[in-house]
Image 1 (tube, helix red, strand yellow):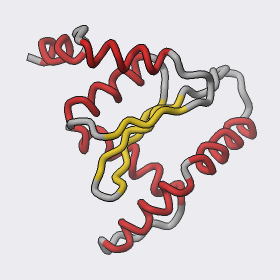
Image 2: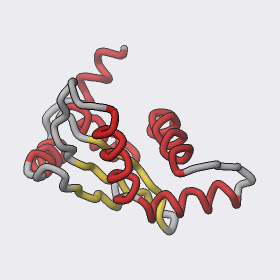
Image 3: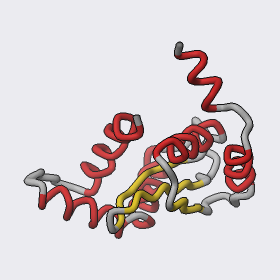
Image 4: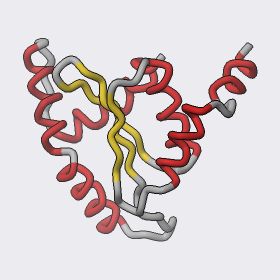
Length: 132
């Protein structure tokens, strides 16, 4: 059942606790890369990042899957549009190289991407499906 699967995902094992400790040690706006993980381990990293209010994204680099987790600055609900736009621009600048690589891969696969925002949206929409 779904409940058993969720319970399994958040069960305390050595891997989960090690990742949790690493993520809890991240300073604000700091990120951490995880390489060489199995599909199930990458899934746990994404789940733990979400549980801790952090952002996570998977990338392929030279046929290796990499998960990058970022501890974002806390966000106030009353922040203005300009501030949010600046945050998005800063995030895009931080992952610019990865975006260029994704755009190149998509273009080689006959996909047309009109902007960096398109790559980010595509990645966020497809990541749950790709993670299983």
